[in-house]
Length: 138
Image 1 (cartoon, rainbow, N blue to C red):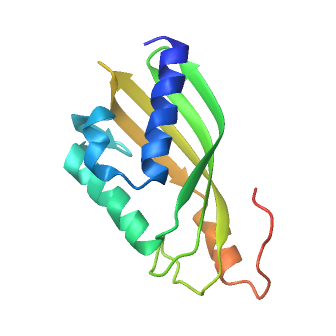
Image 2: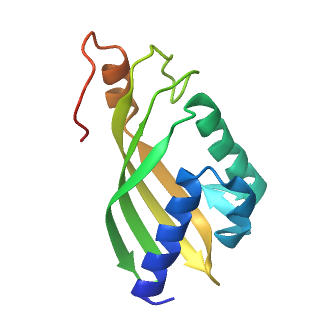
């Protein structure tokens, strides 16, 4: 895939995530992949995505940067939402958050075959456990 094809592919993926349309993830995720270095199936990844949205029903991903290197792409996103259940080890407090996520992917035959994501859980905890609600996002 060319860089422009990868950019369009990733934009469609983020759109599907933000719409919480997990039934169409076969367009984006290979049957067999890895998640954070561990073998996984598409169903495993969808289960993680569904758990995230179950804990944070208004979870939203905003793409800030996207870089390409052949069949790999790296993204910096801002995740926002208001947890109603424990998420990333932090209990809900009624407060909303805006945290950075860094994600790295490898695409083969038009679908993700490797996915890695790192969330700023310490910042999530700071925001949700603060007496003041944060108005800006990183």
